Image (cartoon, rainbow over all chains, first blue to last red; front, side):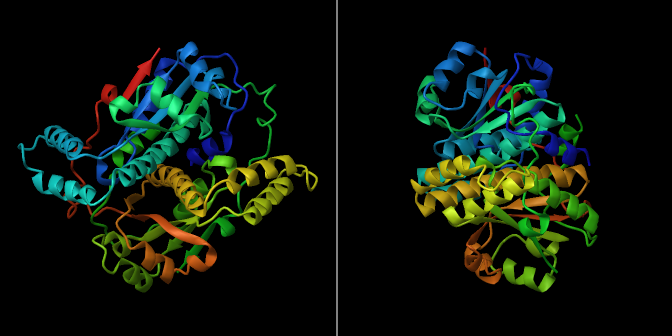
Length: 209
Length: 209
């Protein structure tokens, strides 16, 4: 399948060219991320898509990842700090509307999800939300490669700085993982021509029949 | 792009038919997961691909997710309990071999990664490894849909039971998230015809220019 070729084509770009990714491709990548699965289906993270160079330079201060500002676009995956009853209620109401159901038709589901999260601490909520964002990151990496856009997933950034500058805290969110998008500068990126390293399939996976 | 259609086509299957997924398709899905990105590139998780029905029934005991045994295949994503210096050393040695570099050529990278993890607790290692497994889950969901195989990602399972039965603990691993694969029984799965629910794009994402 084409996906295998796309995954082999991609690598974590170190050096970007100045070429800008078209808005159409960015929109396709965002749409794919929004279609990602999440546990309970309640999408507990949001995406910030930043092109502003001044802002990205500020965000990159102190990080070893120049890709934060040297790429065409920067995606910030920001997860919920807490999965509140209010959030779940709003989401399930939206679900009823999108499925043309009567208001209250999904009360059972709603109560089940609310009571599930009520037994957990906000720290557990945040962690769970972060993991769902990583599913979205997995989709984003594939989506970018599918439209031949290069990318760099990064954990090496100052999350607190991001939370503050992007005012994530006041939105009940926190920066979880980031992804730069752009086009590789193959002549100046020594990683561009490197052989992709992966475990042998039978070391990575075990079949139990 | 085709990916968008694949993502719209997929949903978390509740009711599977008896149809078995071909080994060829399963191998493509595994290959795609193995090609997923991971932070530092060290693939801190392994995959178990289970068809044995007796074993899956045992694993499913006490879970509300019948898909664990009623599907064609069950994938178990199992993350490292600890990212040890030994693990990093072995991985970087493999990297040197796959890239036909002299032994020791990547000592600088190796030391950097080892000292990074040396500042963290095993709990932090485990959590970080779990997040990387979720990137793999994101790829798996896309890969399955790309070969028109249905799937169900699940967090509702007894991880301790999985660790024990699959002897993950003695391998330094722990069950993190699971994914069943198979074919939807559209006539008996009321979710099959449901409208997919997602946030409006401008609610999910914010562009900052």
